[in-house]
Length: 132
Image (cartoon, rainbow, N blue to C red; front, side, top):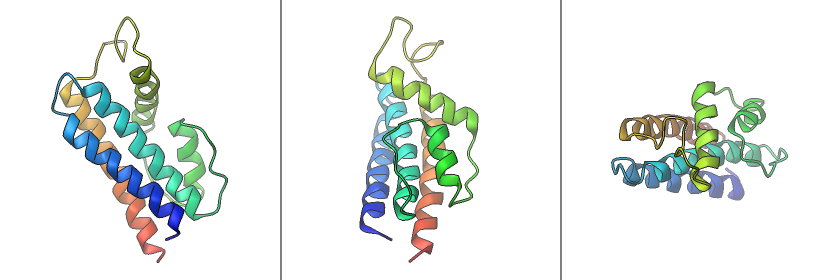
């Protein structure tokens, strides 16, 4: 694995650890959601870095999923990617209604974000390790 790819996947792993620490605290579910989005984003970017692809300075998970999918066949729930994209923006800039139309994510929602991010991260890490 290339050095920069390994740095991206390590950073994604750090975000996953942050989600694990934050997800059960109802006051911090917005931060857990933010770090789940970051884990998935950095995981996708690790694939792009490994393949010497253009690694765009974007945060949109759907687009990064499409770009990384050229090199790695990963199946991801598009609805979850859209939700995490929404949470990424809104958790940084809180509004009147909270982070989603329904308000701040619940701890159950934070757990689902964690499980999703963990699945993406693990799949991509395994893929990168298989290239060595």
